Length: 249
Ligand SMILES: NC(=O)c1ccc[n+]([C@@H]2O[C@H](COP(=O)([O-])OP(=O)(O)OC[C@H]3O[C@@H](n4cnc5c(N)ncnc54)[C@H](O)[C@@H]3O)[C@@H](O)[C@H]2O)c1
Image (tube, rainbow, N blue to C red; front, side, top):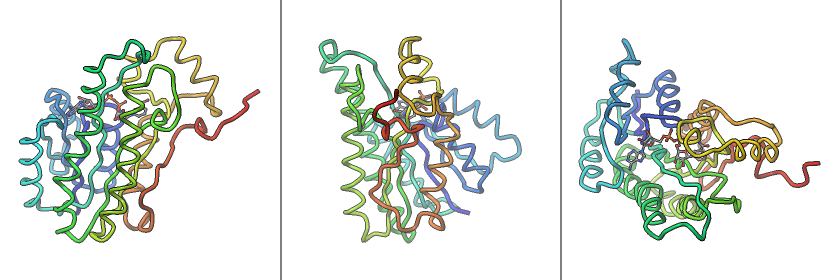
């Protein structure tokens, strides 16, 4: 058995990814700042709790990240992958986005993923290599309204993906990102108004929101060395065709 660290495992895409990977036989170190969500996840595991190690952790807390890396050196199932799904969002026009908001979003979405990756890459290398997947966004690719802080953070994560892929290739670590379109998760329920929903339905060729498990299965593919062993530095849009689209009518 191999281990994978999933951040943001308490909700949405991270939660769905954790469940799918446990089903696929991975031992998941499930990290989230929301300890209650982790307790609920642990309870849901039933007789599969040996497949899950919940860790209450804020990805912006560098000391906690260093402790997690220490813990990962001595896992019974060697660490082979990291999925950075912890993230926060805002839907605020550029003119109203404060620098404080920009910093807060960068701190979680960019610095958090950067710090986790930097702390865990040596463990992956020691174990003979592995795979890192960042959950970016189509807002890191396209100029979506209201996403100046969020979209810029995801754009940074996309560039980081490519640089990490180049620099970690010699350590046999593959690094890729997934750029989800609109996915039905608690984050979206909080941020999307009726108007936003209409707009996504109009601009996504498949005319619907995605499901968290549709991102989870792409993650499972990208961390499985038997399926994606020659894929690194790529940004996989899982978006119902949103980033491919041009004229729609
Ligand atoms: N839902 C979408 O439509 C969508 C689209 C594109 C990209 N994404 C990205 O997917 C990822 C997951 O989003 P989601 O929709 O599942 O959101 P979510 O809010 O449902 O889940 C995010 C999880 O991350 C955790 N988290 C937040 N900040 C943290 C921190 N500092 N330390 C540790 N944990 C933290 C939260 O507690 C929560 O459990 C995010 O990076 C998000 O930007 C989501």
